[in-house]
Image (cartoon, rainbow, N blue to C red; front, top):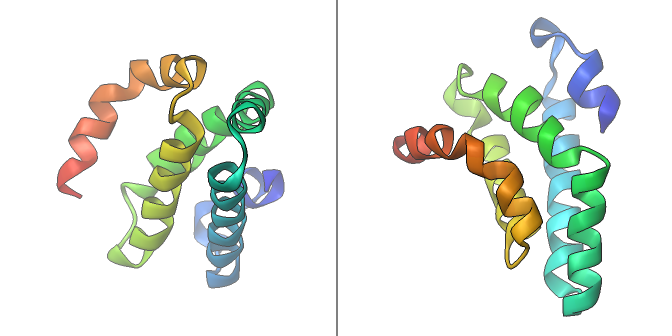
Length: 109
């Protein structure tokens, strides 16, 4: 995931890279959704501590708003990841709170 987000320059992104990131985020969302409450909080906190939430928000998501319509599925999967990662976890919610205006601006997109 790190290589897919950081090592690719915007001009060399491929459809496979986009699909790989979508699949990884979907798998994480699925694991979080089916976990028991204590395990869910543990997974959410692990993703927060390793910087996954920050990486996806600041490196990937903010770069996607300038992309064409073909990246809408990746954008939507990223938002779904944030929902699953922050649902019922105040620590993760506090991490995203400074970016609330960004998310509100993205409602129309």
